[in-house]
Image (cartoon, rainbow, N blue to C red; front, top):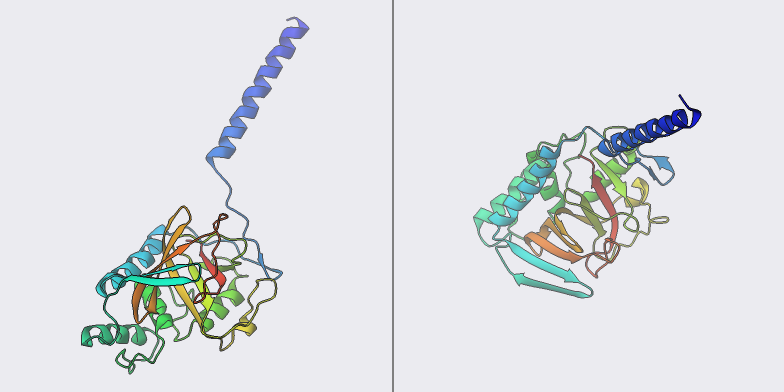
Length: 257
């Protein structure tokens, strides 16, 4: 066979092999690297379980509907409530529902009749339990800072459902938790990395993201304007959370299921 024919055949064979390898790589995309948090490595993700993630969103949505579907819009410095629904102290149906959340975190004597006990963490603990999330992955506790500290501390281990992400470089998705300081508490975290120690006893609030469409984000939380409310937010052009007066966001918990 002439030399140029052998060379031509070899080139075609190499081209076909290269193309096959490229297509194979495209067909099986690699999982993103886990990354780090405050210099510590984040463990490898758990096995995918989208059914549990859907259950979280479904449970939160069902509670929002039970309370009548209250909506809160936070954009810029403005906050509005275009749809006001039932509040925790309206009647025994709702105060008893709040008591159900408190029971999930070991506080069976608390009801929602006096509007004095912040119950957003109890609500989130109940949602996670009802969705089938093991307590080893998400503590059922009466204050957000406790489970946040646990998740941050345990992020180094493999198979963790939730891991911390900075607000400045991560765009939240359905199933994630978005967290803010509450009231006048402002414990600034180093370079956006909150630590378990810095969060100790810090009043915080977290909502569960239930929908994302372009730059529009919707999240459901308990004890938001005395009800289970759906909050509408506007992301910036890079898909990141924008701080609003009542929600100085400082942390996102990525749901890796």
